[in-house]
Every structure is written in C-alpha cells, then in structure tokens.
View 1 (cartoon, protein in one colour):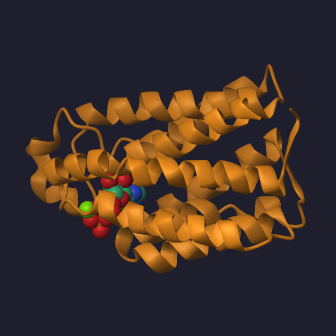
View 2 (cartoon, protein in one colour; view 1 turned 90 degrees about the horizontal axis):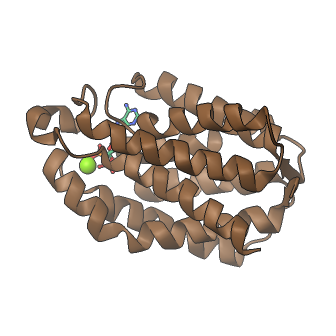
View 3 (spheres, protein in one colour; view 1 turned 135 degrees about the horizontal axis):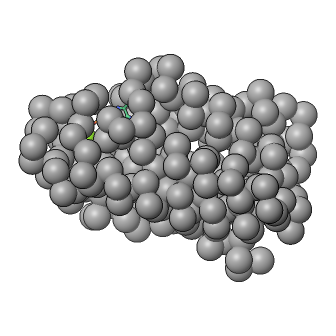
Length: 212
Ligand code: ADP
Ligand code: MG
C-alpha cells in the first residue's frame, strides 16, 4: 500500500477518535496522578466533535482534511492541550498542500513539521515528559523504517511502535513544562498522558491500515 486516499485517511482518523474516546478513563486516571486530571475528558470532547465533523463533511484535499481536523481539536479542546493537539494536525500543512493522496514521505514530512511547530509553540523538548516523548520517537522510527520500505502499513507500524516505546519511556522522566510540573515526583513511574494519547492515535491508525 503506497498511498492512502483522502477517505482512507479520514477513516483512519475516525478509528483514532474512537480509541481516544474509549480511553478516557485511562487518560483521566494518569492525568489525575501526574497532572490536573482533565486530559481524558478534554481529549474525549475534542475527538467526539472531531468524529462528528469527519463523518458529516467531504474533503477536497489532504490539506483540507488535516487542517480541519486540527482546527476542530483546537476549537473544542481549548487550553494548552488544544493548541498542542491542534498543532499536531495543522503544523505540517505545508507538507500536504495540493495533495490528494498520502504517501510515506509526505506522511513523515507532515509529522516532522508538526513536531517542530509544537516545540516552537510549547517551548518543550523531548525528555521534558510531554506528548513530544511519543511523537519524536514515532518520527525517528518512521524515518528509520523508510530506508527499507515505502509501504504505508510499515511506516504506520513504525510510528505506532516508536510512539508506544516513547510513551513508556516517559514514565521515568520528570515533568519540566505544563501544569504537571507542580506534581513533579508524584509523576515518576507514570507515563505522560499526552504521550499515551499520541501512542493511541498512531496505534489505531496502524490497526485501521491492517484492516483494509
Ligand atoms: P492541561 O495541560 O491544560 O491540563 P491536558 O491535561 O489536556 O491539558 O493535556 C496535558 C498534556 O498536554 C500533557 O500530558 C502533555 O503531553 C501536553 N503538553 C502540555 N504542555 C505541553 C508543551 N508545552 N509541549 C508539548 N506538550 C505539552
Ligand atoms: Mg491536564
């Protein structure tokens, strides 16, 4: 599978939304320990609204699909995480301008640019115990896999594996940014909730690709 169509990409995002919505209790539990407890409900409301939008609208381009996704999350989630998760789908838009299909290079460029944009906006770096600790290793894993394969399933599997390992490794980190910094030591041994969300998003997109 060399390319994803706009409809396939939209359906992959709907699967990710379903998994985020179903993970609300788990995300709430982790954010209650290391943050202020709202991550599960914030993500659930954002991805519920996202799913409704994706199911009811048509998209002319990847740019249109991804930008609309990011704007909806930004609008509904609000706050710091709205900006962060909105930017995940908006920050790479230059990589998908005029594209009607998604291939491996475009997909990697898209998230590479999003990651840069998130670091710029939020002033965090990998290692600070944020969602970047899942996103950054996901991108590194995709770049590594790309040397051997341009198949979208392989690339998405690499993203899911990189994000999962990254989210797990965030458990040993001390938070440096965001509200959870107030809870510092209490967070040791628990992964960053945003990193777990990124891992869920990539895993369900990978699962979707294997189902079609
Ligand atoms: P809030 O931080 O407003 O309580 P959430 O609980 O919904 O929002 O989201 C918290 C998550 O957002 C964190 O687990 C982290 O992954 C992510 N996050 C917060 N601030 C930043 C930042 N500056 N850079 C990257 N990610 C961040
Ligand atoms: Mg929170």
